[in-house]
Image (cartoon, rainbow over all chains, first blue to last red):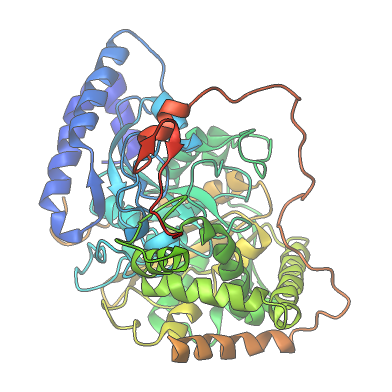
Length: 480
Length: 69
């Protein structure tokens, strides 16, 4: 059931928070094979649902009063284990909550658990989780995408109407695309990062995954907003959801970058995206071919900048200040080395090493400094493009969900699959992915990207498409 | 690991082809100006809260393994 429908049911009294929560818990238990949750908070959820029902009976406010949801497991939750998908934090019980958790709590939403993810959000398949890969509800032999794979799988399997997620290089949009759901990555600074375990601080942004743009907008408007505890939070005009939902496509100029649609895109994906843009055109939008010439450098720039920031952010996990501590260290170096070796998985170790390498004295200019200049080039490309168009559209992922293990042997191939998502993070722009068809029976995602702070336009354009198409209502096999 | 890192570093060679000579580096997508807050105490005493998650404590101190002889 959609979030909007559930809220209507709760408002009318046809449904109760306790009933909705029991339903979510029983769906989670039936879909345990997806491995989409790291921690289930069933008892706390039941208690919260009862409080929500009591509050509703008293007429208490709450935008999401009684709505079950899950957090990606990198949002700190007071007294609830928060692992970031890592052995390093497998036993970490935060003494405080992330701002977005406080906001969801205040709205009356009911947390049912913490969703699986690639370790420290580093990955595009969820296979880099210490707790094992989450699986794609459309085909359990395939990946759900990553790093927010658990969040996307939970929503696709209709276990919860929405889940939180985070996006550093595509980690909301790509799993949303691969699981056939809607995921929005807001403008950098729109949602507080306070209490969100950092991967790459200048790129990380929290957002949501839901089954439709309408639902995503409802959840996003609760978690968005200025937070003095996050120095990069921005006091921007709020997202006007009702205004967005009534937006017309007539006259909307949509840019289709040649660089997003060319070589390397599977033909089934390209066909579905072309068909989606044809629907936009039918309803009055004007599709314009544009160029983002620096796109070819985006992957290299991203995989320099993100690991560089990660190597600094993850220095705190040393077995003393934070995280897993090895047994019987023989000296200080042994304590640090073994704790980090045991606590971090292979991909995280590789990115830390890469990050320290590109920041080292001999390579700083050639790699890190140059990547920051390329980042400027990419941001300039978008700024120029948005002088001519209102939105930019293309495939979210060049391929549909791949088989578990298929790309593990070739990590560079996995990086290259982020080609259409990373540039958006480098520029700090808002973007979303919506389901737009199938290729070989697997969902395809359409990515829409807007200028800074124009989430309303994104949501409006996505909602207008979902009013005239049914792709977002398609259910994975065996899910009702 | 060495082979994988070699492949990643090869990917970075792409950066040399980008025309960036006259460009300023962009380290942060937004306005990098730092906000100042009012000069008032905002922290509350959370000592007990933070001690609760430490692996071992004694007399208000965090205990770590003995690593110096």
